[in-house]
Length: 172
Image (cartoon, rainbow, N blue to C red):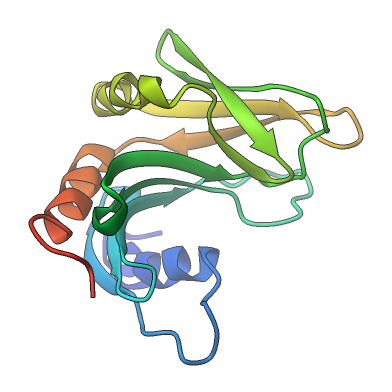
């Protein structure tokens, strides 16, 4: 995809990853597109977030996988990491996110994943800022090993835009 086409289509694709919260949902406001990442403010949810879709994969997916780093001013949360996985994870299994040589354990519930240890979020975000790619690996409900790949080009700028988009105010 050409850079010009990506600049036009990427925000729409990112918005399509996250379901709207009903017909009366207010539109999400784009805070910018940065490489493979985008940043948005969602007035209805009261959050700003950086988001990226996983790289295309020829294997069957149940849903579009994505990763987010969110700011929730009303909850006092800054930099919460979350993934929607392509396939439902096997109950009782584990997952890992790898950035460079760092591995982080993930908690799983269905197709949702987040850092097992929230106190590792600052280290995780620092790793995002200094690497080129991230992988998330897990077993699906059929026991098949699955790995999703993310480019980190633009992740630091998107995280900064999300932070600035919600800085000093409540999202409303």
